[in-house]
Length: 341
Ligand SMILES: [Zn+2]
Image (cartoon, rainbow, N blue to C red; front, side, top):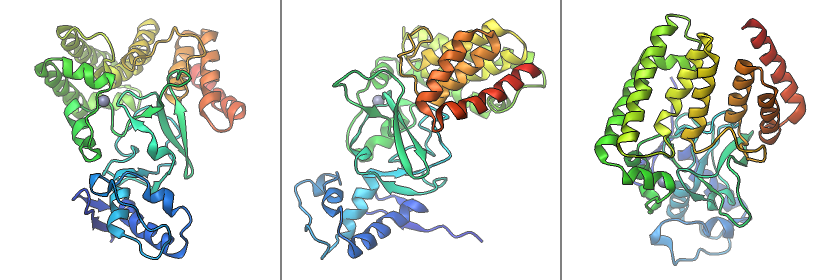
């Protein structure tokens, strides 16, 4: 029988499970033994109740409720399996969410926790062991704020705001603004389509090639895509059509199996556009995450155009540990895949 530690978090009034339940206790223990870093830790935001209070600078008395509150608002879910493979701030890998069941650990990162939130941020977090690496996936100009998302940007506006409630702010990022500007019926309709897609068998296309009846899968996916696009058209929304992301990804997989290369490339373009990126930007564009490596690799496989290979190499160098050597290994597999057709 597997036992999971649970603990009621007094700040959020939520039940913490697993590693996030252990974290406050570990921190209290650590500070009891060694007060190093205690000042930095207690300078973190712990909710308005603790705003004007100052903690003793030594470790003579640790306020465990305060520790609890800090952990509740600042802890990160450590997931070393995520090496930037996805740009998705999936809830299982996202920081500061209470969904920590699949986490391999929970920790406070004193610098990273000061980074503010935007659902359409300009960087992502990845883990190498327990080391957190912050990577840009858009160009960040000098002086521009670094932002990442505390929540899954592919969830609905309502779900995102709900998750952000405990941080006591209302997000006004570009994505939230676009969502708010739309009639709710259009957003609900899209959510409905996404739910249907998530429940349908064709979602499996995202993980394995659709060997069975790809034509039918392609048709169904086209219907999903045009319905979602229609909703966006109705609200006259041109930018950040994020609800198309996973469905376009699935469709590009299906089209590749059907050997409809040109259309598969268009779907990849849709994927990038849905995140507000383009394939035509110059190579400086800091598309530094493996998501783009994968897309560029796929584009190379489908078009044999060397420019995608070059882009892929650059993005790979920017995003992965191991650089050139790892890229060569990965590239060998791509060539094998390409040879198999
Ligand atoms: Zn937002």
